Length: 157
Ligand SMILES: [Zn+2]
Image (cartoon, rainbow, N blue to C red):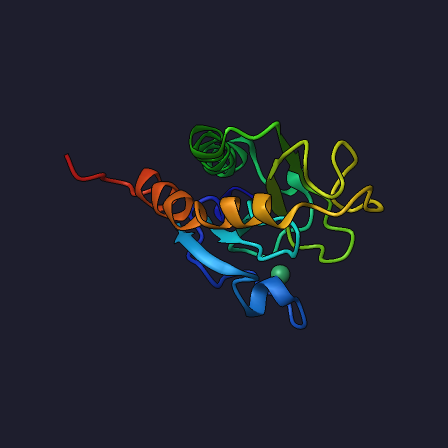
């Protein structure tokens, strides 16, 4: 599957796959192999996804260079979230049970969020305080911008 590493966006698409047909959220950065989107999940403002451009279901469908190229982007998103938001924890996950098009969830978690310390996909444990959500929301444009800058192939000096 090494041809996927340099495959242009739009190759290997699957009919009916929502991540082949649309970005899947607010587009933050588009790279040759993957894109970063902000997921716009209610209750979890700092919820990002790194989505492969090609329709690939499983992580090991990619060869190691292609995996590393994707993981560099995951690393960048995680670092930006940590630098700007100081979350209690970062959650990384690749499930794909609902949409089997490879995507990494990169989620900044906080001890005040509605589900912490449980996964975001579990039952809520509490209501998140609106002022916490609003404070986080106000930082997201800056987070998006930092991610986009860091992922540029040739950042301006
Ligand atoms: Zn797809």
